[in-house]
Amino acid sequence: MTEIDFHFNTPDKLNYACRLLRKAVGARGARVVVVADAQMLEAIDLALWTFAPAEFIAHCRSDGEPHTVARSPVVLAESGDAPLPHRQVLVNLGHVVPGGFERFDRLIDIVSADDADRQAGRSRWRHYADRGYAIQRHDFAGSAA
Image (tube, rainbow, N blue to C red; front, side):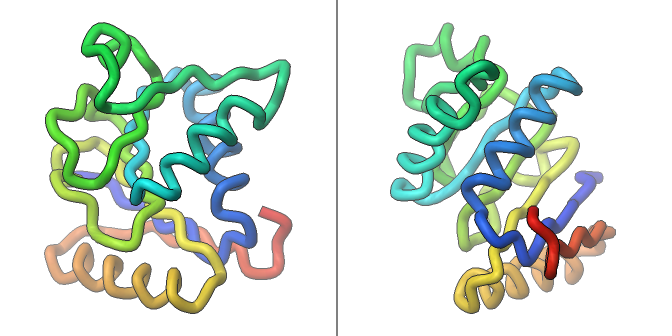
C-alpha cells in the first residue's frame, strides 16, 4: 500500500518542493515524479534550473524524449499524464488527487498555508483516509520550511 505523507502549512510551496527534491534525489537517490497543473509545472521547471547553482537537480517533462524521461531522476507531469516512468515517489503540488497515485511506493502531498490550497488538501486527505491509507502528518506552521 502506498505510504502517504502530508507536508502542510508550507510558507513557500515552490521553494519547499525544490528542497525536498534536492534531498530525495541527492541524498537518497530516489526517482521522483512531480505532478501539478501546467502553471505550477512551469514554475517548478524554472525553479529547478536556478534553485541552487552548485546543486543542479536533473529533471525533464513527461512529454520529453522517451529515453530522457526514462533516465531522469525527476519527471514533471500534469496529473493524469501517462505512462509515468517511475513508481518510487510521487510528489503532488496540485489541487486534485493525482491519478494513479496508488501505483507509487510513496506519495508526498505538499500543501501551502493558502486557504484555497488548504481546502483542496483537506479534500485529498479525506479521499486517502476514506480508502484506508495511513497518513503521516508533517505540519510546518510557524517554521521556516
